[in-house]
Length: 252
Image 1 (cartoon, helix red, strand yellow):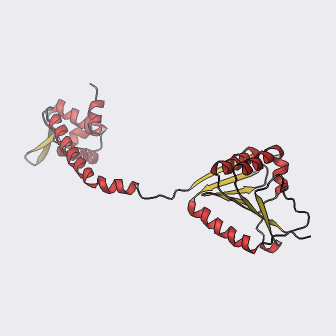
Image 2: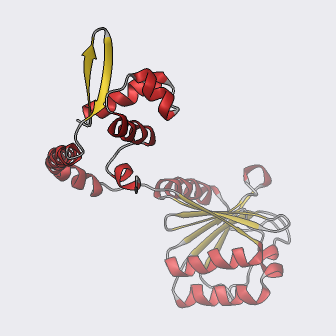
Image 3: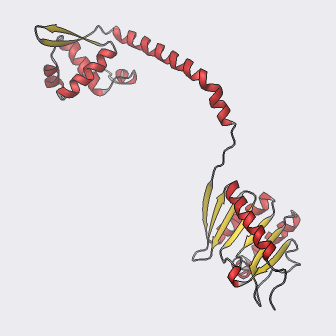
């Protein structure tokens, strides 16, 4: 017999064993059921209670002893009908709260997504993403020379795309003699300001749209992209504070 059908309507493995045993043997004590099914007696009582709740088992007393017996198999259909009624009540209950649940889906959510990119291809990925976003880029802690050495051809394409999409780029870098800057002819939409050593945070950070990218120049170079409106806004505010404090001229 395919007992999977009984499992699918909600009976557990032990409930099925006990139910089938009672159908075959008729009246039995919990002790006898345990012996014939191999189920511990403490668990037998628990499963018998559940089967009685389902209407599939009843009990009678003979003297001081309690005997159990399976009800007619047609009771399974009654059990299913009871389950249908329970589901109908549950469906009505769900219907009553659906408007509130649907209203919750309209509440704006602030999700945070973090991605990590390795190597030069990772650098290219987020630089291309800057172009797609088409928002002003705020950069701190940058070393232009490293980008030029890692991506000599790609950086020319990047600045071309900044120019063609009219994307403004503001960069805060270290105020020192000989600092490398991309030439104005190559990067006309990139603007620099400078901080002294004690004010300067060397962590290379890009902020654009609702994203923050932190670049760590190790082996390999790694870029961590954080997508979160609130975090991006915090970085933007901090950048503006530094930008206002920074000098427009590099030290000679």
